Amino acid sequence: LDCIEPDQVMQPEENLDELLSTAGLAQTRLQQIFVGSTYGSTEAHTSREVEELWPPGCRFHRSIIRAALFAINPGVKPREAARTKAFVRFGPAAASRTGWRQRYRHVLDLARVGLVFTDAAALQAGLDQLLHEVEVVEVRNHYHLSCQNYLGEEWIEVLAVLSPPDVPQALVVEIRLEEFSYFQAREKVQPHIRQLCEGFQRIYGGF
Image 1 (tube, rainbow, N blue to C red):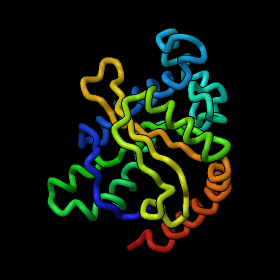
Image 2 (cartoon, one colour; image 1 turned 45 degrees about the vertical axis):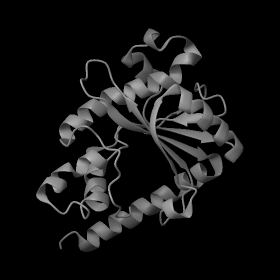
Image 3 (cartoon, one colour; image 1 turned 60 degrees about the vertical axis):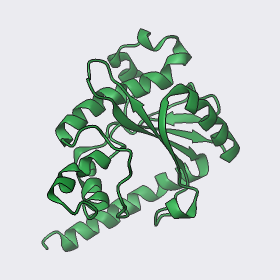
């Protein structure tokens, strides 16, 4: 994680508990969107049906985005991961007490879905279709050198706004578009990154 200046796109709420509660509903709605046209109307599937059809950690091979190899459901971002991201990436930029309280408003991937493509041309076609499927508020190009992280990941981040049923405020959600080669490399390196992070925690946890 890199420390960055918070973006103008932000969540409507600063309370993490409220955000995670809304994220659970938004996650289901996001999955319904990608499942919907494949099986008919999105309204035909209850949240339970969608969760059974496409549980967290699983791939879905018949997404409405025709150019995608498959869609991946990472599930709602875990609380501890959200707290860490808010602290490391946005905490240093929150100079005032008010700014510090609002750090969770900048965590935009509480509800998220990934789309994986064979190559950059298919990804571009998928992005073109996606822009007509959801209410997009920002597209971030992580292929650009200025947006890459230390791991050199290359992907497109689409930020969209969803309004889950019975929720007064909309939530910003993340849709990650990625080529299969980068997706595969990221999956392979994850255990090593996890081991490295656990090592840092053991060494510096007492400080």
